[in-house]
Image (tube, rainbow, N blue to C red; front, top):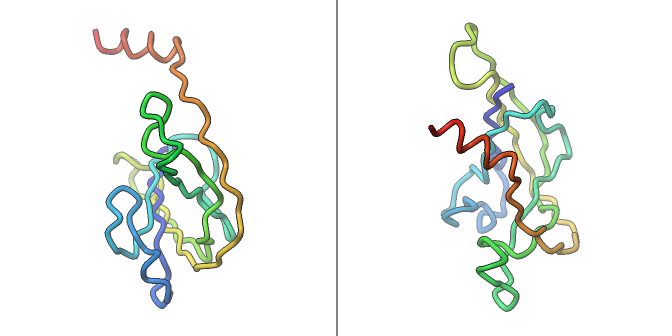
Amino acid sequence: MNKYIIFRAEKDEPVWESRKLEHTQQLTRVLTEYFDSSNKPIPELRYRPKEFIRVDALHNPEEHGYSTHYRQGDWEVSRVETYTPDIPIGEFDVVAICYYKYNPINAPLKPMPKREVLIDSLEEDLVSNK
């Protein structure tokens, strides 16, 4: 099932400086978005997406992408709206808008796992690009 999941701050949330797009750090009510083609359910109430952090002193470009660590985020889902097409001919089977409230927690930083390239997925990419 192809899902487009948008995470958006509730309208009256006072923590405006924390409402930034992850990839540009620009202020917005949209905190992040996911494209999900797994069979996992859409996020539910109290779900907290991960927050990705870069600790410059620990960053090694050969080992890391941008982020060196992650943790459970301070934004918590307060309500969810879902939209499904009348005729399933588009790219997505469901669009979900998850609204957030700012509810900070003291979650520990965890190091990013090592990146892995699976040979099976590489072979599939090579076959499909022929």
